[in-house]
Image (tube, rainbow, N blue to C red; front, side):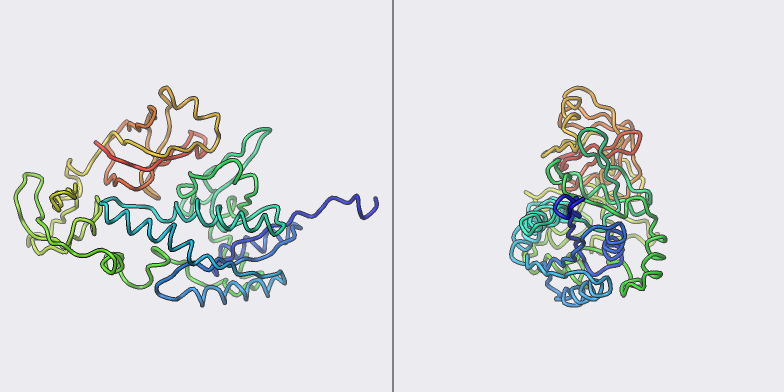
Length: 359
């Protein structure tokens, strides 16, 4: 076969965050024979720690002997992810910046730029499995259920998935660590990042207080009794245990936020983690997306699913009725602004939506 007729080696741009997962993703793809390039996405970070992450990503690319690029997306990340989160809290919801980052940045701007530069695919270190059987692309929970990140990818479309690779979907985390060590990757012993990356080492409340003014309001019991004062309803989320108030009893029975009233600037707390006021059964959704477009037609009727309303929550049986998700059993700590994501019995991630309200 002449050189001109040889099949082209697919090119994949791997998002190198500076962590062990994306490092191993790049290693595995190169080992499989792909033409691999590493890309670090420079996103807005108030703490300024991205310099260290970028250097770790560069060291990984050097170790693997692959090209390395840095995409400067600070402005876009600030506008599309950070401001989205701040505005969400200002309006009294609990937004999910990781979902928006995946939609707008990693599988939005990064994917678009990579394709323009000649890439066939982009890849990340997400723990999720992607499949295609003579039809649309589908996403499945990762082999490692403790690390599965399908919850954050429910907004992806068929056009995006056509250009996506997720090399870690069939691996356990401990296997990834072993691969990194055996390949002498410089990130092999690096700890996993925790929390919201751009917030830095301060608490979320401290971060938000730089952008949202504090306004004290009343802390109410589920019976309407005023038992304390808070710093502003926008700083709290449904299910949060520590309110910052000084009303806790000597018995140390915890209080959890059961409701918020942004108009009156009040938060309502329930005593004890099993209080009935902390549970909901019906969840109203907005912005529904189905990974496989064929599933949209089934949602117009009663569509039995397994669903979760927060990351790592055990899946629970429910029925999707249009934009309403009705659980068989009451669900705890349902926060508007978070994502409700639904699955099939065989682990396929069907899609999701943003929680608007719950009852």
